[in-house]
Length: 143
Image 1 (tube, rainbow, N blue to C red):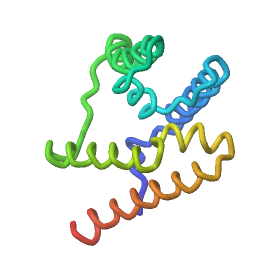
Image 2 (cartoon, rainbow, N blue to C red; image 1 turned 90 degrees about the vertical axis):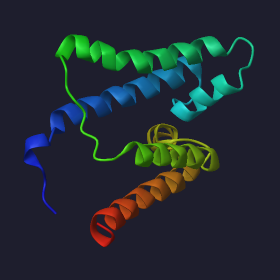
Image 3 (cartoon, rainbow, N blue to C red; image 1 turned 30 degrees about the vertical axis):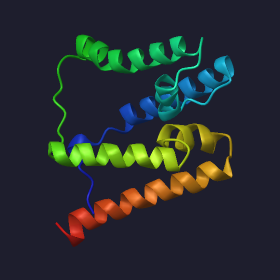
Image 4 (spheres, helix red, strand yellow; image 1 turned 90 degrees about the horizontal axis):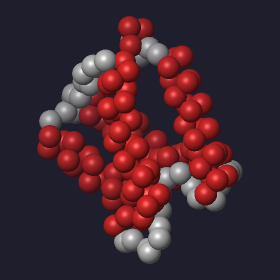
């Protein structure tokens, strides 16, 4: 295994991790809720009166962030080495997994582990292990 030093971004990754941790901590302190994207979006699909405003604002912020980045930093084309079919199937599998796992990577991996949740530890180990296995199979066994 080799590291792609051209695209290795430890400082940007560290800054992103710190921002994500601070946002998660602030969200739970201010709202008393876990910053899990699937739970926030899922709450919009089954709305509770008076609960949709902050969820919609959060979702709009997620969608506005890349646009703001584009305005500040300029264009950067993402590179995705998969076709539309693969992306749609992968998205559906992630969606099903978040329902079975009672949360997503942000809910379990960031918020759950920081709260020392045993359920989140099992969930995080499960989805990370499945991801490692999938990459190995696709790139080495079948690729």
